[in-house]
Image (cartoon, rainbow, N blue to C red; front, side, top):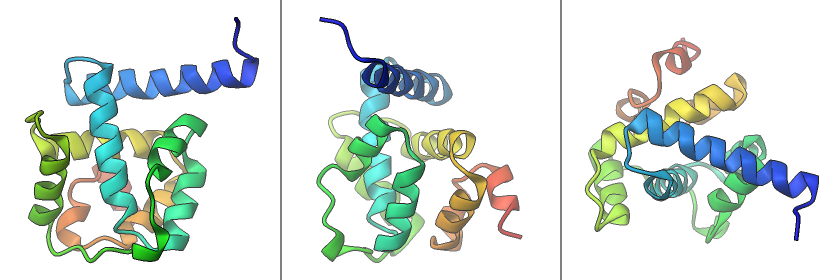
Length: 146
């Protein structure tokens, strides 16, 4: 059975994102990239207002958007972000049993998003985060905050 053109394109785009993330974060394979992408997207999504989470989701390719919204409970967000370290610790727990350098993985996902999403939307997302977490975004994305 062959895939329809829109489905084939969605799968291809997801594969490109995973390969790009695998290379950026120096991960072993696309399965590891998927685990990192999913965990980081969920951590970020749950720290944004409902409106901003939806706006960011609209920027993502179809299959990445599905991963992003998987299990989302909009009535329980935004979750208060206590600190950069708390964000990273929660992410590390979500990635177990894998032990990736979590700050590196987050930066790689944020870099990927900066590369593929609208700069204005990324600027809005960064604007909702505490200053110590903004440093995980690429310099080019943070420069738009000034």
